Figure 1 (cartoon, rainbow, N blue to C red):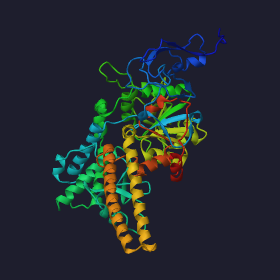
Figure 2: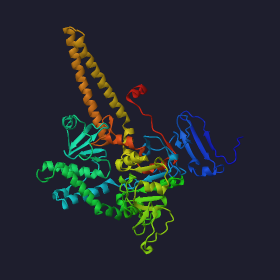
Figure 3: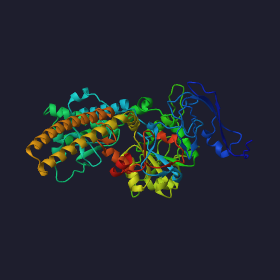
Length: 596
């Protein structure tokens, strides 16, 4: 008989084995989580209180799963209760705490204990709101082309152009002066280069970027960094303009640098006149991905005792429309009425923040309170409403049961005061912009950071699929090195070992044979490597790699993002108290030892 102390949670696993047969050994596993013996604390974590039945039949093995320190240990994958495996369950739900697909995992560069985080903040555009590239980026592209033609006098032929939203990737660098588009490694060596849509040869790359006495920094103002998803359309348009100018001399009198400046001006015009946001506001579902995990994620974070805040460069009217679409109640037709229900998931909302300037405490930007109904801005004294000379001038703010404060402008000092933040390291901020969100908040403030990289989900899944290909590439590389070393040794012997004429002829024949073999292996390796990269992207290859080196983009991610993941809602798949720990760093000398 087993006695269990009153009020103590317990787990019981009973395995009922059938008699072994000649072909298989089957078992039925019953797992119980007792409700009667669960404490109030256990009631808060329903994922530990499961009743389900699985039937297994293979290898005479009993597979179990258990949860320890918010980590799911390896287990045999089972179907979800509702039979739908397409959407992973929130960690705090009864079905949560399961194994997380590699494309949904959160990857850690620097240790981060979530228990030390008191406030979690989010950017909106491209973080909470993931725009659809085939519709939103195309909308931005068309709007920019129209501005170039109608406002800046570019040829009308541009209006017939189309946009391939799959062509460009983040992490590229535009050479404004030469009309080139570059992909480089973490050491800033150019590995892939195009002039417009024409690939530059290795000789052209070396002559242009590899033969200077002083290494180029590849920074503004001579270069433009393509580090946001919104920049992909303007990069593609710049490449089209370069091609058009080269093939049609005289039609565009501006040089390459001026063309890029005009593209940027056209993009700014689209923003200033509201061309893009008016279209999105009219039909959010056409341009923004729906994500049913956002609300559960925010609820879980708030239920764990953490403050949540939103800091966006968008103004209040647009912010309210987008957040209503993402977090508001849905009608039968899938539409959401415009209201303020979504504010219940945030303690502070700051619109029109003008990041990255917002992250400078010395930035003297005024902080205005926003009336949600009218959008009117009201003066504040560091967030505290200011008395008016004529009280009739101040609109009475309708009391929001949600308790959320809405502001425009200000700086990070205002935000810290509003949330009673004592130390910058108590804040986790989630964004998509390596410079506007992550670098500034990390480098200047010391906030903990998580970068959202939507492309990562596909990339890690392809890495898993082609892992054998990568092993084959390494074998080819090792074979090439071995042949090369043998050739060098034979050549050395001919020079210094005093071989006779007969032996010399034999050595020359052997060297010639090895050199021929070396060339075959080199070409085979080169083509296999190129083909492997094309599987990730037809032009630019793997996002996080350039050849065998980490790409410039990957280097930035590693330097400035404490965590990185494919979607912001992947946070909902982990315990809000999780301790994120990085994998061990390896240097080349360690890898060779550990791999042996």
